[in-house]
View 1 (cartoon, rainbow, N blue to C red):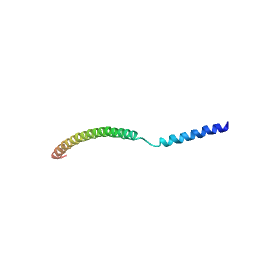
View 2: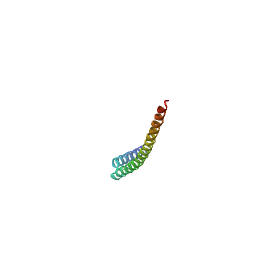
View 3: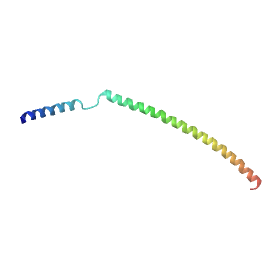
View 4: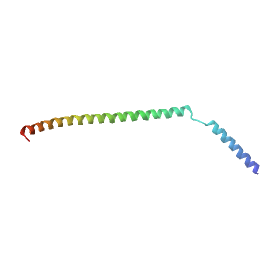
Length: 86
């Protein structure tokens, strides 16, 4: 009876070794799919980041123009105070 179980166990080990040898790596299709998914995700990320950068540059330019107009107004006010002798 023990010999019978030993043979089954031995056959199972041989089958497992064959399965492991046959399935030792990735197929070309799996690698191509993974690379394709990564490229698609990178493209979506690039598009969204470039949108955020454009929005930030627009806000920056608006703030810059607002600041320059405030500076010119402040110069006019300061020159008026200087003319009044304050």
